[in-house]
Length: 251
Image (cartoon, rainbow, N blue to C red; front, top):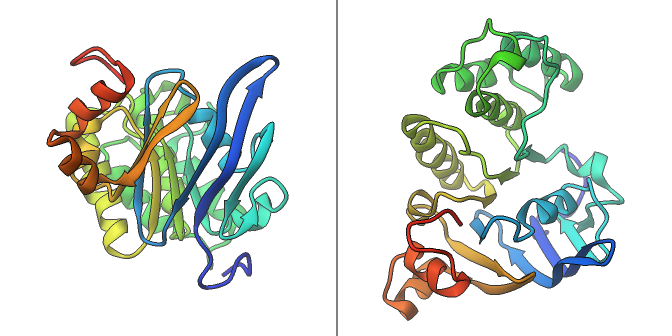
């Protein structure tokens, strides 16, 4: 295992994080902490800055201010070392378009090394999601591509899994597999999960803590059950109240 962070290090945190594109403010002064073994769901309407925040967390983008940390270390400065402990699924799946899912898995196995990454585990995951192994990546649906990315993210049994809207494009059965079988099972084993999602009903059943973004700021950061007790309402209704999203519409 990598020596990044000590055994008691917080898996993920943001300290007064701000993101801007030119003069446009995306996020301002966002701070939160994800405890070990927690399933933390970050919610927000389209364009709220969720994916920008995720890119900062995995060291793909430098924030305008503040500091994202993984296991106590700066995500930008120590990205290569930290990603040995992190599984990441981006919102837009990306792999060599001409390679089949099977070849993508085998290529990743060679890059990681058999001792650190399980080809059998990832192949079983892809098959469970109903993705054909012999179809070029470019010809897979977006949901199938996302399923391949999720399988790759789990190949090295990460301590922290970061998912950016992982069920976008998946059918109902596959969405249930992601939330119940994957995220739920990982949480039961003590893996920390940070997930952005539009699927409020599904995440309500497994999230421990919820953050909600509105107008570039984090307006909620608290345990899900205490949030539901306070509003005496399900998560979708709370989200609609706090963000002004149309009832029944997409976050």
